[in-house]
Length: 255
Picture 1 (cartoon, rainbow, N blue to C red):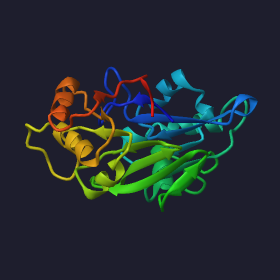
Picture 2 (picture 1 turned 90 degrees about the vertical axis):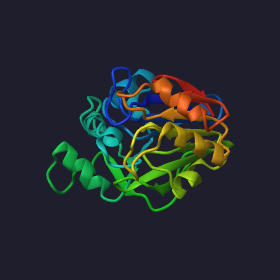
Picture 3 (picture 1 turned 180 degrees about the vertical axis):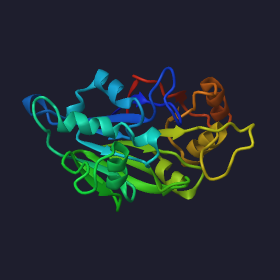
Picture 4 (picture 1 turned 135 degrees about the vertical axis):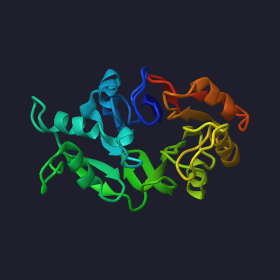
């Protein structure tokens, strides 16, 4: 399984990165029978453009939305246009998984009339347990955020990834992170500030989550542009002694 960072800016796009979007790829078969499966974890503001630097966007097999805040889902609107109105013809529907009401929310975001919505391009599914797509198994786990939100635990063969989505410290986050090879974890708040409860993690809390979960590696993501990313990384290092780095656009990791 390969992870490519498409967007990692927190809350809104920054000068160096779109908002949240992560490409996972896994190969099945050999030679002429080789097939690369691709899924996206989130598709936030600006991410669709950067995605096309790395793969043909039409090769994506499924999209998994952690929650329905715009910095995690709004570029699904552009993806809808790409798939529905492509010069080679409307593309086959692909599954889009998300929280309760995902189909209506995305149709509203694009301003589509009631009725069909985006269903001619996407097969919307609300989370109700683990999902298998090709070699991937994605387990959505509820986490703590002001809206219905999920962390996503992804496995393919012997590879495992925990993606926090947006969350405060909670039992669900620990389940997402437990013993994964890589924990892709948000850090949106600083420990030194008086932060509102139940929304995001500090850098220290992200590091403590990785340590508590015995994660093999920690990637810090979703740092808002108004904060210094290196300071957030330094915070996380005070609580986690394993391999750790900042997620960076265009970087690919072998899991």
